[in-house]
Image 1 (cartoon, rainbow, N blue to C red):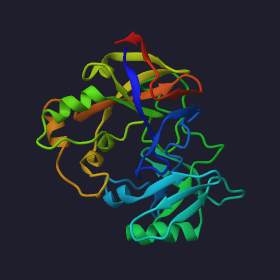
Image 2: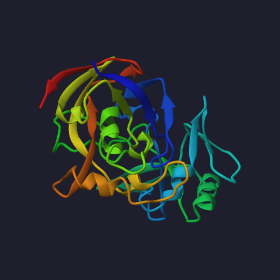
Image 3: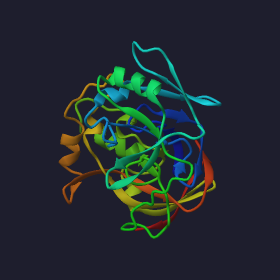
Length: 266
């Protein structure tokens, strides 16, 4: 039976991951995942697609603050909650809504490191961002992730891709929340509904991959792979597909080592 081999969250959208032994899902997905985001001076979200240097920013979760580090920068602490924070309008793909601005000191730190004007914002406790109803009828919500609460990929799928590449790539290139082992390559493409720990998840849409997969998550360097190779055998409807977007039915927890029960297939 397949099982969970790794769990990750990305507290700041498009910055480095945190590796977890257990993950709690609230109404927005994995707790702490993409709850913070960098935006430009128009409120538009920033990612490694255009700012690959974001890969060098490392968040850590503290009891009261998000601790952030980057090369040649003094560590920064960002409060996890803040009363009466100023709200600004931000955009993530087709969504526009209010976000909490974390202030000038925090903005200056990120602007200095990224060498461009930007601000750090937080998804509000009362924020509302429904997932697209095109692929699911579950009334799910999401914070600053691209479109869905979680991404699942199997180790076997990565192994198959690496067998086609001259240089093997780590799973971090694909930024999943849930990694599973013990199944065939691309088995996740055929899963429609699964149970892991306390969670029931629907796998609602293959993940269309972008330029972020070409960014080395350790150095920030950009190359052509894996998109070139993936496009040779995983292209469909003008997208290159790898991994499955997931929507959870109710809040709950899962842990590394939990079995993956396939409830329904496609």
